[in-house]
Image (tube, rainbow, N blue to C red):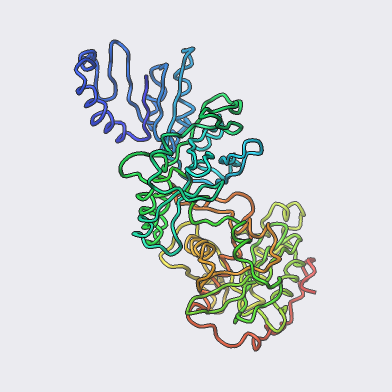
Length: 551
């Protein structure tokens, strides 16, 4: 037998503090151990080897064959340099045993997950998610198997359901004490509250149920999905340990929420509830946004509360993606209204699409004009594969975004930082003269802390719908817009932002929030937007490089 742990320290600690003490506590077992051959990393019990290894060791992963391998805390085990996944490597250990068993377990970490009702049984199961939505190794392995879930029966309707964090009742604006005292579990079928006093009885009647199965006369009926492995999920709300009662979980969760510490909240989601921190925490679903945050105004309309407009554009190879936002102050809280969004299609190393963006920047929304606007310079269209395929590289500006900026003094060009910064934004001059010195009136590049602004955006998207500081969306906002602005999540293990699908409109919201912060809208929005005039038309330079200039 071989037992794997993610780190060497954990392997040594478990072996010394748990295994050895367990053997010593049972004299009959202790007497069967060959103490001359045994050591901290292995025991010989009646001639059978029990190895204790850690995932980072190449030699231990590829060493003695074993008929039974237990891999603990898979999500916390790093890949072995030059070897790959330790989980896959451990499978080779049992190649010579016909009865080989490999068991893995772990607290899950990052990912975006949803659930849905089974069309035949009516029970609600976790959905199988696309690989790009999941970074948790154990969750990906669970999806490959039978996908059993430990479900408990509602004390009111007796229908089985999986206890989940979103079903734990905590009143709006509750204190941590109130969350503790009022804790209950909501039945997703009948909506009734299961009092915390019912926890033990409900869990004792729990069943492991796979999609397609149901409970009849206290027995699980039906066949699980065909799979090569048996997999089972048990959430943190299924525990009967003294400190794992529903009221204890509610207290821990509410304390984490009230602290405002995102890392603390993610830790609670992972370890206390056994759920992925991308889709089950404070990140709202696009359906919730569409249902609770749309208002009775249409796209291109500007509500009376708006005092200023901004526009930010994300650059892609074949289009410009933009979003126009309106801003107001309510009780010293900055509120945002999505006014317009869209895409300007065309090769972005061609001046045509930039002419269209120039028109957008000078367009009016009723009597309103843009106060501030910016573009993302993370992608340089002039170096795109498409531009090279055209065979006209020598005629393309070295950076068409910079060329556009040189003719629009009000435009801010930004570049996101891949790492958190000490300040939300910094700027530097990127134009130099023949002597290598910065040009006084040269181009400024604003480096933006995307981690700071994305965290702020997601905090606003999850804002109380009735509290000052919320964000608003027009009633005719398309589903795709909502999907894109909720397409990312922050992996609790690596701290990196991961996205599934397009996220261009999310980047636009991040850019617009930067523009609002940079303009000082959090303190005061200057002037009346009706009086804000379009930027004066400049005589756009006609270029003789064959690219048509600004015409």
